[in-house]
Amino acid sequence: APLPTPVSLSPIVLCNCWEYVKSVYPSLPGTNHVLNNLAVSGSVAVFYYPRQGLYHYAVVLYETDDQYVIEETNYHKCHKTKRNIKKDDPALLGFFPISS
Image 1 (tube, rainbow, N blue to C red):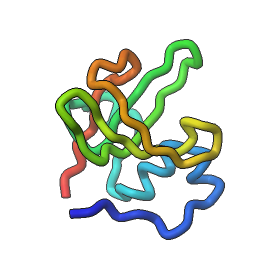
Image 2: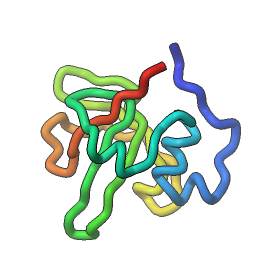
Image 3: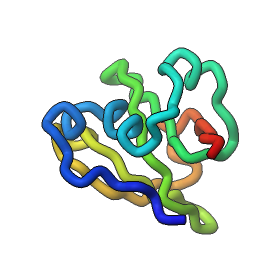
Image 4: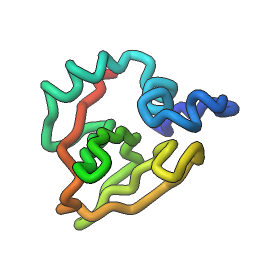
């Protein structure tokens, strides 16, 4: 099934990756729960960038043999982007599965 996409993204959502993921998956629990329940696959990708000391969250669209295709906001400040990331990306901590 295709992912639900918000019709228009407010500045709050464009400038906050967590708010974007929540807009796609409203049932997503809080960040502490997500970080304490990471899995090897799932609908939400979780990154940590140690230089900035920041966690980053993205929606997983699909995967290929060696990459994930993700959609996110605020990877580039206040913009929505789609990226391919390698499965061994050092910033990728894991995933959070969303039960439908």
